[in-house]
Structures are given as structure tokens and as C-alpha cells.
Image (cartoon, rainbow, N blue to C red; front, side, top):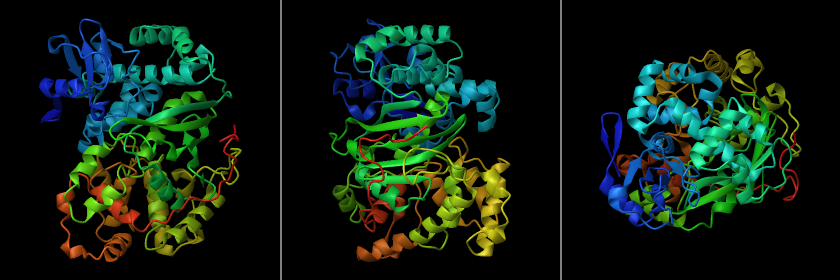
Length: 510
């Protein structure tokens, strides 16, 4: 679908048009189709009559189509798609920028802040994004604000001024103008089409788009197996956790199993309910939760890659659509990885729960057992290593890592270069290759990580009657992370814990 020229992804019109003619849903979010005769842009799977080839152009982002003067199709809602899986596969500066824009960095820190995080000047970053994605950082941020606003309009009863500022707009006038430009409809018209659902102020209920197949129950088992008391809670079919967001604490509840039954290749949806102290955190909360779900993965392409593999192929057929569980906070994941060095998962959960109870900030959520934010790096950097419930050397490693994270010597926000992060982690005393690669796997979303020294990998291979020396993990590139998860999954019990709140109860409190 794309060819690579340097750092630039070039859309091949003939391939794109074939995907549009076949309404191939796998390419929703990978590119967008603009129709000159109607002035609208669509996702490739739009059910409308296929336009003539001479009347269409193809764009690598919704923002690029908008910048070219096209409005979003009201039938297929092209902005409501998973992102391109290419962002994580190639991990170019453009892909990393899209992650940060989705997190609201441009709204909070401006283009200068985004450029600084990526190590570029604002002018060079604008040139790079325009070449790669067809639009600069301001246009990309504007498209994301419009999408967030539409979701809030259609899924909450918030007033329009509240929606405007929650979505990241600086004024109601800017909000109104953007919605008319992007959707050819006023906020009132958008809400009128969908009705006006009841909602609690500060609570946002929406659906997170993921490609199918989506092995939601397997993802839930993994999260439950690694659950940290106080920060996370699980029940039959759902997962909830606290969120440390830029403007205040919040929490999210996900109906993880709801997307398991979607038709392969379709866009499925995971219902999510966010409770936020400040609605300006809506965009950041959504983006971080999507990372947790590995929402931009293309499971059809991943699973097809392993079809003929004698080891992983049967595992894929047994559990199609398996995801690599991400994380809502990279610093938290790195600390948890250090705690988990050379101990069992159960032991790591116990120790991490003690860290949370002693150093985490207490919050009220309304969910029994969901009581704390994970302690931040600044707090852990001041802890005496001797007081930590772990061997002294590991305690020093944890405090040293926390200090480096607090100083921003190491950034784990999906905007950093992966090779640079790995080198910085390995330079920390007590941080070895397993820890650095595990952080890349889950915090940085690297789809091509394999952990040959991992005890779980060795146990899985023994159970499958195979030996590590027989394997050729290079054949699994660029999806070695998914092969790793399939191996781990063979050891995973069904870890769903007894429900901690009634299914009809409030998922999270204020």
C-alpha cells in the first residue's frame, strides 16, 4: 500500500484504489480517500458507491484530507478509525509525533514543545510531518481535536463550551468553525443525529476502535495476571485502573471482552468509561488507553505472517488477534519491570502493591480496591533504597532509574527514539537487556522484541516440546513481540478475578 522513500511513506494510488473497490477494512486508518466531485473524504471501507478512479485522491492522514479542503463523510466517519500500524512498525519521527499529538502535547505545550520532545526545530518538524503525513503539527492537532469533540458531542450531555475546552480548543468560536469545516455540520446538528445520552459530569463513555480479530479475553487475562493492587482492578469481562493525567487524576473502565466477537478484518469497538477530574484530559486519557489495548495493530497482517511457522502458526490459529498489552504510563512500566527482575509475577505484584500503598497518591474512585495512583518518578527518586522491600542492589537500581526519569534523561512517552532509550536504560546501574527490551515491548510499543533469556519463554518452549536453540526468531520479524506473547499465552491461566463492582454500578468515582 505504501512504499518507503527515505523517511517518507508514498501512497501507491493503484493499490489504494484496489483496496477501496474491495472495501477492505484492514486499511481503515492507513489512508483516506478524497472524492473531488463530492468534496468529502472517506475510509477505504466506506459503503457508499465506489467513485471513479479519476475523481479520487489518497491522503496519509485525515488532517491531510482536511487541509486539501475535504470534509469528513457523515456515513463512514473516517476519523473514527484505528491509527496506522505503520507508526509502531517503522517508529519514524512522524509516527512518534502522532502519538504525542494524540496525547495532547501540542494543545498543552505548543509546536515548540512537541519539537523539543522529538529533538527537532519546529520548522524542520513541520517539514517532516508535511512530507510524511501531508499536514503539519497544527493541522494534525486540529484534526485530533475535532475527532475528540465529535465523540464528546455524540456520547455525552456536556454543554458545547465544555466540549470545546475538553477537546482542546482555545475558544468556542474556534470549536464551532472547526466542526463546520471538518464535518459540514454544527455541533447542534451532530448531537441531533445521535440523540443526547445522559451522562455524569466528568464522566465520558465512548467506544475505542480496534481492528479485528481482537483477542480481548486473552488481553484481560494478561492484565489480570499482572494486576497491581490499588492501581488496577478486574472482573468478569472488564478491567479498570487509575490514570495520572496532565490536569488531574482519573480512571477508566474497559469492557475488554466486548470486541472478541467482531468479524475478522472489521473495525471492532471496546466500550470505555472515563472519569476525569478535568475534561481537558479526555484526549490524553483516550490515547493512553488505546496504547494499553494495542489498538492500532493490524492483526490480519500479523497473523498471516505466522501462517506457515511450525511453532507460532498453530498458536495463532488457536488465538487469532492476540495483542501486545501496552501501558498508560511509561515510567510506571519501567519501575514495574525493575521490581519484576528475577522474581515471580506473584512476587512482583506483592512488592509493587507495597510500593503503591506506601508511596502512591491516594484517590477516590468508587471502585473497591482501586485506591491509588502509581507513585511518580519524582517521589520514588527520593526514597531510601534500603527501605524498599527488595534486595539492596535492585532498590538502588529502582531509585536510580526513577531519578533519571524525573530528570527526563530517559523519556518513555512514545515520542523518544527506541534505540536511544535502550542505550540510556542500559547505562543505568542494575538495568540489563531483559529490562530494557521489556520496556521497549510494552512502554514504547515496539512490535519486534524477543526475550530469549526470559524464563517464561523457556518454560513455554519446554511445554511445547521445543528448544530455544532450534528457533529462528529472525524469521518472525517485524512481529517478534507477537510471537513472544503467543508463547507467554500458553502459560497464562484464565486470570479473571472476582468482580469488584456490580456490572451496573458506577465504574469510577469523581
